[in-house]
Image (cartoon, rainbow, N blue to C red; front, top):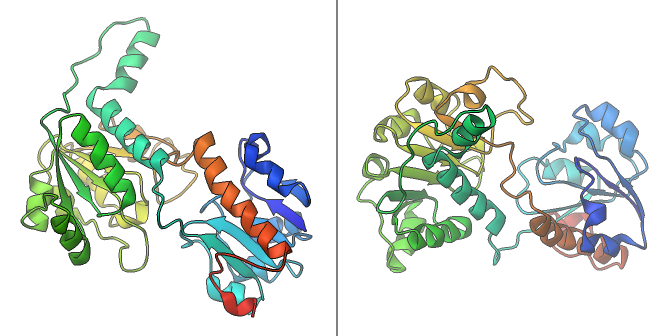
Length: 322
């Protein structure tokens, strides 16, 4: 098949062991981002299979209508960036392994890294050294602090293990079902939503973005957090009410460590989430490790081979195949 891979910004995939799975195909790799559907269609017009890097490019009817050769979109995990109905209307099969039994340990590790770096002022201390100075301030200890995990899922579970190993107290908030599962597992669930935010030194958000969860974290939630509390988001920016985090940060009450933004790539150096001293920001790299890529794209390439062999797997819109 003619396979096009888009948004491989650092030309990483060709260096991974899993890339050999595409040996039987005609592969083109694009290493920059093209947001315009018309221009992107000119690039990938011959594609029979399209490989996505998570949510870096939106797939809608405008693009699909310009790709008459496209038969398959192969990716991994959730797909809020893909118009599934448009895929079906254009006879494009979407395959995506939802990996229900495997958390992203890379994302969990990055969450911990952001918490440690924020509490110990690692970026500031490093910048001080590089500028010819010595210590630039005094950090804080994590042991004994309370970590509030919002969302009772696999990534949050991995973060909880790391936090407990550091001697932190862990409490949870989630949907009604999530709270019930946490309670049944013997975990500590806050007495109320307001108590969760008000008694957590750190709140880390781990929820999938879908219509029901968009804006689930409100300005009221953030305002309830204690002075100097840390809000961490390695999930999706859309989970937070638009503008709420920026507003709370500009009040100088809380700190934030964020890996996700409303607009990505975000390159506006005037944006408060990039410039405010209370914010530690990273460019959506929670899942960006060689190990995680090899795991994810091994599944993605398996989906292409399965389709080519006439036995598709992980079909999201199976009516296209049938």
